[in-house]
Image (cartoon, rainbow, N blue to C red; front, top):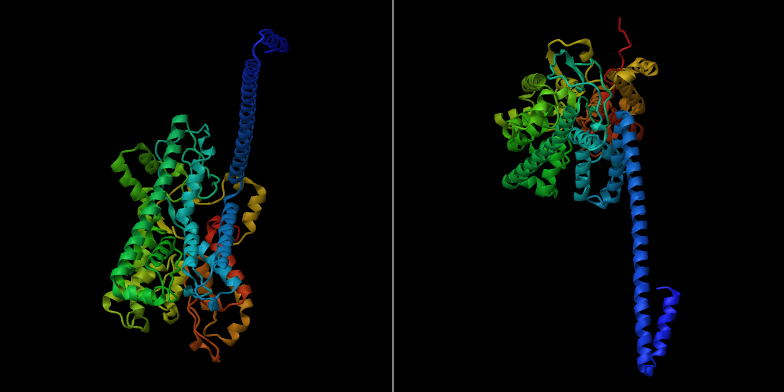
Length: 582
């Protein structure tokens, strides 16, 4: 209503000569109607303004989030996997250190040194189980923190993160002009000392791996690309289910065993350990091949509990050395049950998936044969040399066999011990050093493959190999063994005085075992004993931790580098090829 209409209506009301009270009521009625219209109009304008502003803010926030996610994904995919892994392990190690320092230990008088706490955090995050403090120092909440670190550092868990990260980004949906081959075949003619990565039968080229586990970008037409993307998404859930099932089943079985068997239950009660915490901690540590156990003596206190050892052996194997075989068996079973085409695609096109842990059926079978072959050879030698020694005292024949089997199974990459390694025959220790040095997927593959496939498993793609500057770096870097020798020399220098004054505890063999164990992320150690001191110290006290616990901080720091180096060794498996020993 404009001003003219407004004045005209007021004039009409005045000309009606209404009584005073009716005249006022008419004016108030007129004003109230006008105010309602004004307020209604104002409210609508404010609502429109608010909705418009909210929409702009929402679009701005979405664009910011999209920009941040896009930038993050772009950076992650462009960044070399080596640096992604470095950043990942460094981050979780620092977070674990802060969490362990913020929480209280079992007793305030036994609070470990700050550097030892950091060392323990790195050891748990890299699944190395090298110990500088006794495990029973840690409180229940600290054991939970270490459980999270061991889970986050496990190879299967990290590969699952790589699958979820890749399949949920926009990059796997991009198409190339290369079609998938209808089938892929594998053949190799070497002893493999590396993780298997992808190679393309149609292109004869190596691919640059993505963030966590060589997840290759899909190619082919739209249908093949969608099938591959869906298959990888399904594979990520299969790996998640694999983790959940084994951890749930293992924790439940160990919990039941320790609750039912009096000897195992008494050990936990005596040490003040909760059955649930012990079960979860032990299963996570065993499956991820870390080797930490909440007891000071590791598994020595359970060496007569053969049932518990039998429960842990499958976790050791299927969580690491036999993971590709177990994963392929699970996918094959799911294919038969569900009849889904994605499972068939995963089994037939394992290379195109780019998931380094998914091998061919033939390769998986030979890997399993190699693993069991190593176990058999070690078991025969161990039983031959140790059957009637001090280490076997108090055990029946059956308990000796199970304990020996458990010990040799752990020698590859787990590191849990039922025997004191300081009293084991030196020949056995040398055999363990060799086993710890071998990567988890070491397998004997006696068939032939082309020259391009001989280099499968490299963490360097064509672009890097073709780059002259990178070729120069590949030529000057040393082999894995050369770096280990350098680390051993450096530690012998930092611990030189102890090598002279305490040669029975500190010797080259014990230091070598410590370094190779850290490199293999195993955790074996000969420990330290006051009885072996040439000059007994009255203040000396035997402690249940590794020999590294008696090293200087400089020596411990070098071993931290070795643990990181060992956890990332797959990125340097081709080092030293430029050196010709002829």
